[in-house]
Image (cartoon, rainbow, N blue to C red):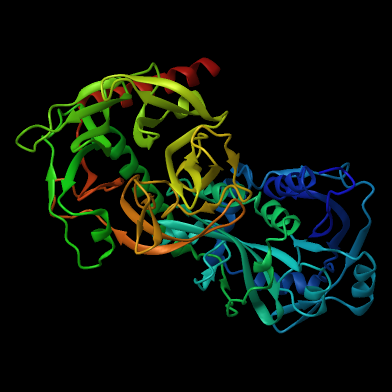
Length: 573
């Protein structure tokens, strides 16, 4: 597309000046850096707050009781000073030539209304979008002035009434997830959700959960602008959610004490888990096809493989049929080396599987050996995120030897890559290992007309952001003409459960899926603490399960990490 053909969107920004918190600055910089659509900041709409009189100041002090003092001190000394997302960023140079309009709003009941003269001025700039970083709850004509509306971030669960403190109440209430939304404002407090993300709550410190919520959502306005350029933003005119007025109240002193106790307990729980509770996975076989798992009343009987040695585990199972003979491919892991490799278990005459035999090992960690049959040959796409690529390996012969024959995706640290053919196209789904919690949250997709490529990124990447249902967890399958995709629910713990999603739309430009069923591990099983792979194997299904145990090798590694960090810290003093 030539420069002349690049769409241009005129953006207005509601703010408090030209110094922005870091998360807002990141959001604006990403908008200005877009390639396929040009975003121009055409107007800064700056809130002009009237200076309170001395009498108003006294009233304000009376309104803020001593009972909130602990929160005030905590917010000033902990949140504002330690949060990366709230760090002030001067953008006066970036916006030096941008017109600025100072506005005082009229507050009526719970809404802020712009004055007619200011509305006339704003209308003159013919804005496509207004991004709200300042002002209060808006209503009135301002919501209809921009072509695509006024967009605002909601950093709390839209279904909760107690909100306003970003990332705080989720920790206070012990909730597993923290939700964020980018929304288009509609009259009388209505909202149309444009983008939404669900993240595992960072249980300590609070500032980490706050930074996660802010920083992981900064790219969302660029996604909507991209969809506008592709003419795929019909959701901008969707049905608004019912208005909900959250209680924007600060915690009192008693709640702050409870909150600090909750944080302390979370720290101790994490420390105990780090040293004394490690994951041990094992693989099981279910004598039923994968479609049975769609039935709410289905109770699978799992035949587990022999219990692994205490320092090891096996996980990520897939079955490959060579003729009538099934072979089990899986990840084997050793806590002493902290590295995984791919093993194969061959089916024996009595129906059992042999002991694991190493068939693919590299200097880097390997897992999730996703198998593919293509033109009569057997291939595998193991997880090799440390190589920052998706490599394709061919069995030669199967299953003893694997030779790399292609790189499907370059310069991408793909996690749990799942490759399948559907409706005449090949699809590749994965999450990304980038050193943050988002490896379990953001789902990416590629497509191709042939397994060997070339592979093209999906127009809407990342196509989903939900810690409960993004990261791939086994083989997609078709039942009664409908495509289903197993995914991991990592909201409570890594690999805690399986969510089977019903794929509603899958094209190079669009993706939509919905919850079909949620599968939890059997609490009475020998592996009651996790379930994160569900793989089709003809009339069988293979799964894996997790239990938490003490592992001496992992304990030693944890101690080593603590001493290394302490040593490095002392060197810097």
